Length: 165
Image 1 (cartoon, rainbow, N blue to C red):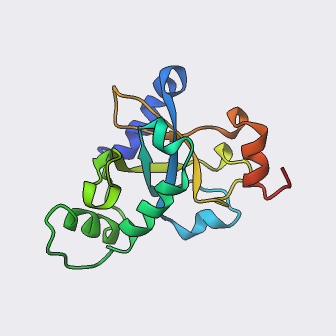
Image 2 (tube, one colour; image 1 turned 90 degrees about the vertical axis):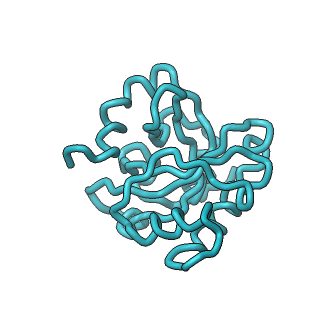
């Protein structure tokens, strides 16, 4: 794991929690083990947007972009801006951090694609039960992390756990 960019996430957790910004994130691709109970944490590819005027009110827009991005997996594309995303999604051990998503997919919003470690203890149920969640970012580093669920508002916890609001 030496030299693995995911190690930077562990090293930057304090900075992220102390002075990071919380944004919405959407899953593009995740290890299938994360969707069922288990003990181990695993990586995932996520998208996040930095414009609160767009994504705070419409986080589903990120899921739409994530679906478009995932649909590129394994394809030979004529667009040189999109081919790196197709390649990265095929190489599931690839560790890309804070890749700007081309405007052809993201529209006018600034959206980034990045790898995260899905830390089960940061999720209310210990599993990925929703494609949207709060992510902590910081301008001084490319590391990101899922906001630990102890900081989530009750309404978000209810949605995540499938409870009536």
